[in-house]
Image 1 (tube, rainbow, N blue to C red):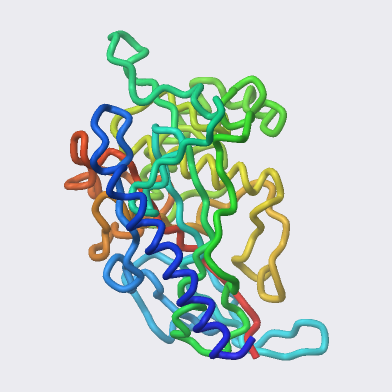
Image 2 (image 1 turned 180 degrees about the vertical axis):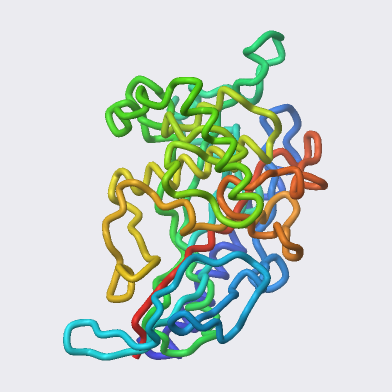
Length: 342
């Protein structure tokens, strides 16, 4: 695709989303009551943590270093895919946007637009944590909307780089229409191993993952743990240990990412296996992802602006949630990519 066509495609997508935001955000913001959906359209310039692109490496050498933790890269600077030689590059790429909300059909990153599907679907979940007291007050149910968002490709920051995720903005997944996302019994179809980790010893091991994720990177061997957020299972939006909106929404997003890998929708892109293309990763490697908040308040600076999956929310919860006007969460998903570039 020529640069002119790519630029035209990007401008058309941006115009469409801006129009949707302008048309729908005013009614959404003006609506009263606990079901009000809030959010704002993501500015691709000011709402992005551009330092999260780094480090960039060639082989084991970081040509653009960063204080942010990085995964292991292939040691050799050259690589071979079939008969094609190349340079082994490693970098972080923004590829997906995610709405994470307790309100069904709330599109946070599209300006707080709330849709009415016209039929009763997706409304099984509660609107928020229970206030009846006891253990039930820590329960919350979340929905996720997953968008394609290949930002670097659109903006042509790196021109003609075949390793970049290409395409246009699109809504790829809506959990309101997925019965596995709302019913823990049905979820057992895709995570039958969950019963093996529903014990105190397995849960205690997550403390080590919490420390590792906060200090540097999560421990992929503890795949049933989501670090400080809790346990990965079940792979749905029912969070039974809700501490706050930031913690619970990040846990729901981590579970959703794992669910996509288990369903073979999302694939692996990191490490030596990813040099020549994406590969199957039914057990998600947590180190492959970083989550950056875009709503209600974009986090664009600091050590934990795009924290590793499972890192403590103590350093990122401040100013992230506003009662009534900012309880719907939006995230930009960064993915590690190792690629054999021409």
